[in-house]
Each structure stands twice: as C-alpha cells, then as structure tokens.
Amino acid sequence: MKVKLSLKNRLSSLSLRRQILLTSLISFMVMVIVLFSTMRVSVRSVEVLGNSYRSNIDLSSFSKSLESTEKAMESYVNYHTFDSIDSFYAHRNNIENYISGMQNSPSVSDLKQKEYIVKQLTRTFIAYSSKAVYARRGNNNAELDYYYAKTINCYNLLISELLELNKQLLESNTYAYQQNHKRSTFSIEISFILFLSLAALIFIVLYFTITAVTKPLSDISDVAIRVSKRDFDVPLFNNEQNNEIGTISRAFDRMIVSIREYIDTIWEKARTEAELKEKEIEMQALYTDAQLRALQNQINPHFLFNTLNTGVQLSMMEGADKTCFFLEQVADFFRYNIQNQKETATIDEELGIIDNFVYIMKVRFGNRLVFTKKIPEESFTELIPVMTLQPLVENCIKYSLKNEQGLVELKVEPTEEYVIISVSDNGCGISPEIKKSVIDAVKNDITKLPQELLKKQDTKSGNMEKHNGMGLINVFLRLKMYFSRDDIFEITENEDGTGTRFIIRIPKNV
Image (cartoon, rainbow, N blue to C red; front, side, top):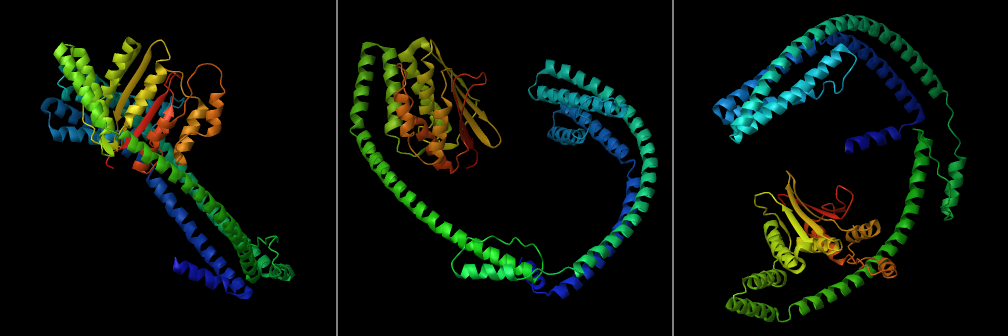
C-alpha cells in the first residue's frame, strides 16, 4: 500500500513535460504489449485446436465415474462396507458436478437433446442408486430389490446413450476443429491489422496530448479568495486532469468537501448526543421499572408452591388423580418460570416446559385446543434465553382460540447451521402494521410499541382485544441481545396464507 502511494505521489509531482515524455514511454510499452498479445493470440489458437476433442475426453472421464459409482453401489449392497459407501458418495458427487454443465431443457439440436437425455438419465440413476443405498442402510430388502433393479436398468440405458453422445460429440468436434482452424488463421490476420491500427491511434493520442493547452489558473485564484473570506458555498472543480492544474483543483475540492463534512459532523454529533441522552434516561426508567417488577415477582414464591403442594396432597388423599396431576404440572411450570435463576436453558428444557404449559391450557379449554408437535427424536442442547418458547406458544393459543377450534403447531427442524423452531396457529394473523412495528422496535432496542399505534387500536370499534406486542418484543429482544444479531427471528404467515407463524433460527456451535 505504501509503495502504491509513493508511486502516485511521484507521478503527481512530475511536470507537464515529464508527464508527456512518460506518456510516450507508456505508449511504446503498450505497443510492445500489443505485439506480445498478438503472439499470445497465435499461441491461444494452437491451444484451442489442441482442445477441440476435450469434450470427448471429459465424457470418457464421466463414463468412468459413472461406472465407479455403479460398482461402489453394488459393493455396498453386497458387502455393506464403509469404503464402498464413501466411494459411492465421492463418485456420485463427481458425476453431479459434471452434469451441472449439461443441457437443462429439451432442444431442437440433436447433440443438445442427447445431452439433455443423458443428464435426465443420470439424475434418475443417482436417485435410484441413492434410494437403493438408503434401503440397504435401513435393511429394507423389498425397497432394496426394487431400486437396485431400477438402478441397473437405468445404468445400462445410460451407458447406451453415452455411447451415442460420444459419437455425436466426436462428429461435432471434428467439424469444430476445422472451423477453429479457419478462425485461428483469421484471428491472427485480424490481430496484426489491429496492431497497426492501434499504433496509428497511439500516435494520434500523443499528438493531441502534446499539443494540449493547459487551463488558466484564474478560477483557482477566485476560489482561493472566496474560501479565505469563509465562503464555503463554492462550486467544485471536478477536474480529472493528471497534471499540476488537475492536482491543485482536486486538492481544493477535497479541502472544501472536508470543511463541509466537518461542519455537518459537528451538527450530527450534537444531535446524536441529545438522542443518546434521551435514550439513557429512558433506559434508566426501564431499568428501575424492571427492578421493581423483579422485586414484586419475588414476593413469597414459596407460599405459592406450598399452597400448590397442599392441593396436590389433598387431591391424592381424596383420590382425585387428574386434579393431582394438574396441580403438579402447574407447580412445575411456576417453579421453572419464577425460581429459575439461570439466564439460559437448553432447547430440550424449553420444549419440556411447553408440555407442562400446553397440558394446563388443554385442561382449561378442552377439545377447543388442538396442539401438535413435530420434533425429531434427538437431543437439542443449544442454549437460548429462558422462557423463549412459552410466550410464543401462549400468543398462538390466545389468538387461535378466537376461532371455533384453535390449531397450534410446534415444529423443530435441525439443519447444518441452525435449529429452526416454528410456532404457528390458525388465528386471524397479525396485521402488517403491528408486525412491522414489532420488528422495528426490536431493531431499535425499544421495549414497547409506539403510543400512536396503541391509541389507534384503542379507537377501533368492537370487542376485539388489542395487541400491545410487549411479549413478542421481549422474546425477540432477549434473542437479539443473547446472539448479538437480529436475523434469527421472523414473523410470517402459514403456507396457505392464514394465521401467524413465528420462526426462530438458533445458530449451532455458538
């Protein structure tokens, strides 16, 4: 970087005479480069002729990879070894990479159409062979015999089509070789003509560069006088000349722009400081309110648990098993909600407390609430803030029950980078205005919706409950602060365009 700056400074310090001489030298060098480029075109033409049959060679390599894939599949089906399955996936990746450059759609060209057929047959071969391998892994002999036979039939047909394609490519490449030979000869002739034309053009440019007249310095002098009188509302030169005048003009432009930016920076800094002061006051108020709420929430929680335990014992004595189980679930839920002093919990722990909460809700609402889970049978030990999922499930239950029957679904989908958790309902959905306000509040670290939006909801007619968004904002804010990013949550609608869907993408290995 320092070498580039030093070279730039040296070039800028040259006089106009030396710059003209340098231009002449550069022009001469350009002519030399063009000459060598012409020679390179000739060499390249020879290389093109040499590569005329490259496609046949590549097709032969593809055939070998295809054969290796088929043999690896047979080896895995017969012997079930790790080497064979590794070889299968390696060769399968090779043929997938090869067919990615083949024809994607039917064509009127026989060669392209044949290439399209080979590509489709290869995809079918990959699909059947992969299903055969999966069936062998799962010891599903019925599917294994079916897909193995399909794979062999597809392989034999594919080999036949590859032979036809190789034959067509050979004919096409032979014709292409003859055409490339003609084009190479023509390219060499054109290169020499362009060389002579470029030489003439360089001499013309040199003539106009040498005979150019520099601009007068009066404009620069006038601007300098105005700036000295603190008048910074002057037009910029925007001079792109690479000489002394151009250098001075650009220096004046940079100076004027810097002064204007400095003045704007001072005003922006003052405005920012005022906003930070206002936010600091707001955050202090929120902190005080949070402390008060925390103290209030800690008032004698043991009394609640002792009361619930007394109810559990009483129901056991009276033989009310359902009531006993219900009170135990309620006690577990409140114990997790109130006495959990940790800031984080695993996804498995959060999913466990959801079962408690949903049981309580089903006891309350009966058959009106239908709750389904789609969770893989594996452990999810990734950490998230405590009580992240329960408010989302509660929100979905609340708005789905406005229908005759509430449908709520909790889904967990692990990927390579994320554990994707979605909670959806069949309610009336969140309005775009509220959804946008919730997302904006989280991005700006605001803990509640704008007052004008809340007032607007208050003025609506009917008995519909207003949505203050505080629970959602609380969940998303804690996720944002914990993961230091605001792209892991999303509010959308179901695939059929109804209801509401909350999506959380928990990064792995954080």
